[in-house]
Length: 308
Image: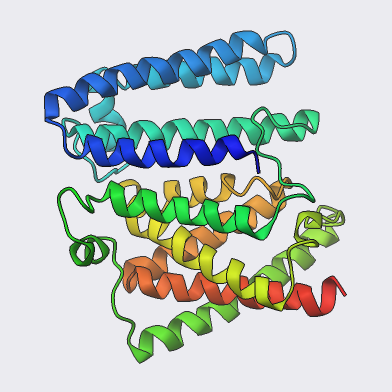
């Protein structure tokens, strides 16, 4: 991973903590400035890529204009209503979350479309053979930190209250059994989906080369547990209560751009929806158990069967 990415993590977290402390009027001023920066970034990227891909260029320009429209209160209220979002249009923290959610979703989707069209990424996010276990764990910890600090830890709540709001509860025996069962069930579901896609010729290529230098028994547990804990606390714990199951699962899928095949993103999207309903009927802890079980068992299977 580019060391420059590490330098972005900490200032971003400090920014989130600071914004939780400032008064509402100053937060709104920051939101206005950030909105214009996001708009210009997307809009100018679209202009810059006009000669390379008209389709991608138009998408970037439209995404920029949609971001700019967030400043219009009526548009924002209609968007919240249509999307069934659990956020307040006049809350600066909610606006900040909505802005970042949409910007990241637009960037991830457009980057994926560009990748499928050209074989290259717009943003330097490709995962390659040099990607190592530390890069993955740091990225996952960053997800966790966004959720915890974004929900007010150190500014409005203590750690216990923050985790409680994120749906992180002490697991019961039924939570553990249910989570483990659903996690194993996801393995069988994905096997069935993969066989179906193979029949239609979509799943023939090897799309997990980046895993070959990462997977061993120890790393399977490290990767599986770090992804299960950190991603679920962010996506199902922090984002889903505000943006709903479908939108959260969509973002969850497109942020897994290391799987550059559409059929694989579709399966991750389905997994995201299932995890969303697990969170809805139980809690985030159970979703963590499901996700961790799925990832660990899947990577152990790769370790012993696929990569040997």
